[in-house]
Length: 330
Ligand code: PBG
Image (cartoon, rainbow, N blue to C red; front, side, top):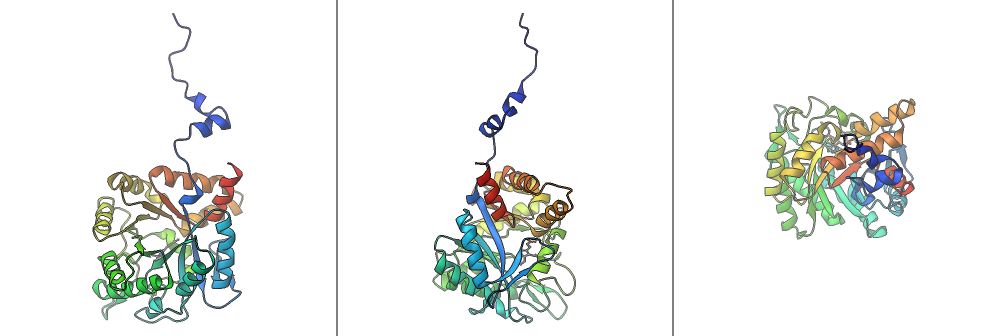
């Protein structure tokens, strides 16, 4: 008769730091991180974003310097958002070759050859009404009238040298319109990361201060998805893939881990990105500033959760910090 008790000793897996590392089912690598930043024209500008401690609106020179350090730390993918010089009803500054995003792309590609540059393609930062598309006299967002404008913005980013364009407007057919525009412009190598399943989320609050993109009337619920939806997210992703998306995305991440998991299982290809959005960042920052949470362990736990759910790539304002934390523990 054995004296061994009749239960499984799972604690053997976690006794020491070494055991835990050896038995890790999920790992996070700096190569999976994408760092989102906000750029503006001018020089020497570094304006702190109140609602996102540690993040700044930066002129191109400052952004390039900052990205040099970030790249040295191992983060080699950046997502650019622009603060334009002017706004109008059709968001024409979105396709202006002299604007902040296009200038930043040229400068980053010139100085940091191995940095993958991804650009956000949307109209909300560029329209005076703050909506992601053209607004009709009745106050509706006109899907089809918006498509050529998104395509023109994407082409201007490709012309500047963007590696990947990322449409976030949630207009039906935006990936197809951009794909056609890029082909027509001779940019067959430029890849498309669709913000495929993007939810209407409170967690974008801090971003709207950062990007100056809050809608001046109404909200985005007629084009972004409701948090009640999961089947619909799969249809959105399926549509993006059919239209030629090279990457798909679920956004936000933390309140939608089930959607990330489902997307990763339903669509093993193409690579799946998840956006750890501004509010998810600011919530941890604010709690940490009050001494209510430990910033590093809370942020890394959140990033690990997103990875474990099935994301191949994680867009996060924590990217540079995470690179440092990962290096300290390796
Ligand atoms: C729209 C866009 C938004 C974000 C990324 N692209 C805001 C919105 O839809 O209102 C949010 C990102 C974040 O909160 O970090 N161009």
